[in-house]
Image 1 (tube, rainbow, N blue to C red):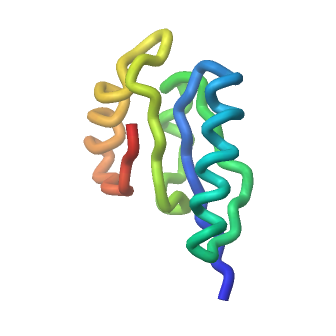
Image 2: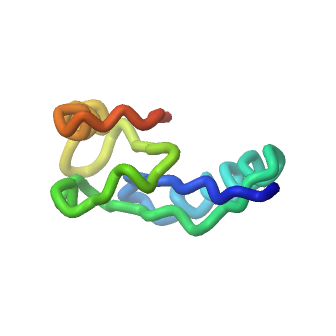
Image 3: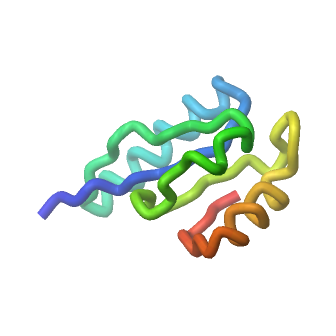
Length: 87
């Protein structure tokens, strides 16, 4: 059984995103899940258009250039989204 593990990621540093993506992919694959390319949002500008129900995990950089990751999560939680989050 191989299920896809979908990740919504908030990271504004492309180099950091690419490096961490390889690590997360390895971990997800070790647990037997498929790892489709995560959706990377550079900032919180698209919060209203995201279908949060399709994601199994949210990863957020604490120090985005325009906003703190924790305040971004507060906005998402106000939408009654309780997906697991890693900072």
